Amino acid sequence: MKYAYYPGCSSHSTASDMHESATAVARALGIDLVEIEGWSCCGATAAHQTDRVLAASLPAANMLLAKQMGLDTVVTCAACYNRMKVTNHEVYSSPAIQARVADALGQPYDGSVAVRHIVEVLLGDVGLEKLRQSFTHSLRGLKVASYYGCLLVRPHAVTNFDDAENPTILDRLVDAMGGESIDWPGKVDCCGGGLNLTRTDVVVKLSGSIIDMAKESGADCIVVACPMCQASLDLRQKDMQKQSGRRYNMPIVYITQLLGLCLGIPQKELGLNRLMVAPTAVLQSLGAKA
Amino acid sequence: MAIKINKAPKGTGLKPVVEKMSGVNLDACYQCRKCSAGCPVAGPAKSAPSEIIRRLHLGAGDELLENGLVWMCLSCETCYGRCPMEINFAAVIDALRSLSLKKGSKTPKGNMPLFNRMFLANVRIFGRSYDLSMIAGYKLGSGSFLDDTEKFPAMLKKGKMALLPPSGADKKIVKRIFDRAKQGQGKKK
Image (cartoon, rainbow over all chains, first blue to last red; front, side, top):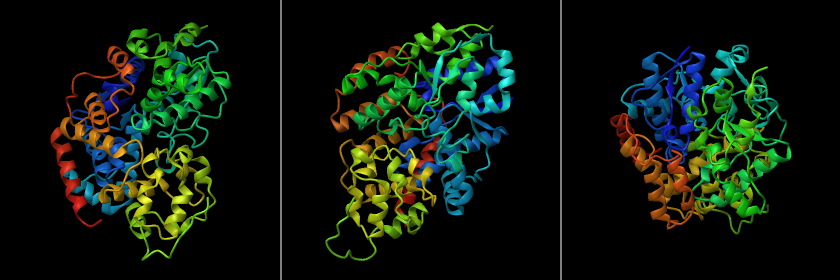
């Protein structure tokens, strides 16, 4: 299993822990992630709020590099994943956009590079059976709320990620690890991430209500697959406390960190020390596989 | 929400240009309001997706570019996901944002255009996002120095924010893309 790996800008900042844990898990499972040489920013929200050609050309430049490698692209960041998929759709469906992207890049891009999120590869290409066989540790009944957010599932016609309103990829991985994926209503709600610096009050309110729902549904922790969701939920719990007067102490972990623990990878290689809310409940649940 | 019109608007308003820019047929909307029911920021924005569409139907002009939702929309796409007519409202909002920037419309509390400018300026220089510089630029521009400052020491210590600028990107292609996109903005869309 060999893929062109696009880490995205957050892999060197807010999501260094996701990058660390994803690459460690890939190594342990024999997945070859070849980092795309010279990769650049996908443009994120800032580009698509500014200009349609800019928004399509920045991801296209990276997919063109992946195309030259002859490999499918694997992405860890949900925002990069979304921008790349939307770009493929736009380039593929609009000859006008395709022409303007070709002009911006100086060479044509046809929208044909397959883009996949790391969890799609883990579930689809590795598969639950091989994962179960590879686990050395178990989450022993840890109650986990799987949180997907927006960027993986919407627009669903374009991302085609699992199910639009009730995705279960993360839940299935949690159950395979011996945890208990709980039923809760916040799976595909928005954390408010796009307003993180500009309207922090809105982010605190939306993210706070997601943690409230998970808590009321009995969750010991929330598992995520998106750096923006992780930052909003993990970094702002003190702000939530200030805004609502309620106490918040909910660990927000990446799915790749949980998988790493169950594969027996040392905590330090999974970036668990980088989390703002210590994942105490997670570590307490961890035991050797029966 | 009642929409009051004082007089018949001149011409067709923004609707044709928004439809052209977004590729969306707004006439398909029959105001079922599923979009607005699911919108996470309809409250704080004091507006909603179905209202924007109705205003465009009724001939809204540049005043619509100052509507709270234009810059508060999170692009979560819940509206698009639930629309029975598959109207891509996120694309409509992006078109309104582009028009707002072009026409220099007023922006509501929380300066998203400034944030976007700072983000893209760093991408243009380094080929990748440089959070520390982007945040400093936004804080300087918006005068919000003291917000969140207590978080930076922990983020730096935990390696959740890089001190040094990013390296390794193909800066040449990134610069070319920015230059070409800018040239395109001058042309008729």
